[in-house]
Image 1 (cartoon, rainbow, N blue to C red):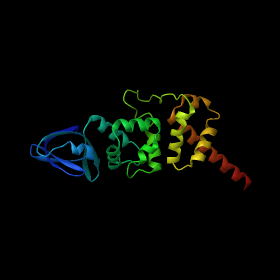
Image 2: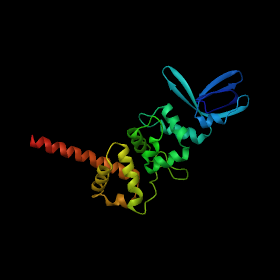
Image 3: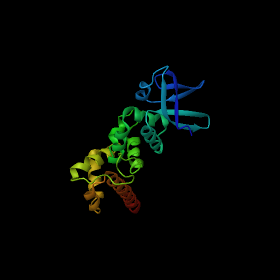
Length: 215
C-alpha cells in the first residue's frame, strides 16, 4: 500500500496533481482544498489511498491522515465510490462529516453534488458507530438528549431524506417508540432511526397479511 507521497510538485490541475518521485510522475486525485496547498516546483506531501480495479490503479491524495481515514470509511457505504467519497470531503471537513454521521444528520450529506436523500440516509445508517467525532469512543452512543426537541428533528430529517413526508416520519417515530420508551430517554438518533425503520417494515408486513386474509 502506498501510504503517502513526498516529492516535487510537477503539475497541479483542477482535480489532480502530479508528484515527481525521482523522475517518476505519480498522478493523484484530490479535493480542490488539498490541491490549493500544492505549489508547482516545490516539495509537496500527500497522504494517499490506492483504489484497485480490474482495469486501473488510482491514487487519491489528502492533506492529512484524518482526511484519508474518513475517505476510507466512506467507501464502506454501499453505493459510495471513491469519486463520491472525495466529493464529500470537498464539501465538508472531516470532523463535520464525523458529526453528521454520528448525529444522523442526513441533510448535511445531500449538500454534496451527486448525493440524494436515499444515499444520504444510507450513509447515516451504515456509518452509525463507525464514524464518530474525535474524542468519542468508537461505537459509543450519541450523547443523551435532554429532551425530545433535541433528537426528534434529527430523526425526522433522516426519515425525510429517505423519502417519507415529515408528517409520516413523525407519526412513525411516535408509534415505533410507544413500546420502547427507553430509546426516547436515551436520545440516540441512530438507534431511534433504526427502530423506526424496523417498525415500518413490520407494519408493512402486517398490512400485507391483512390484505391477504381479506382476499
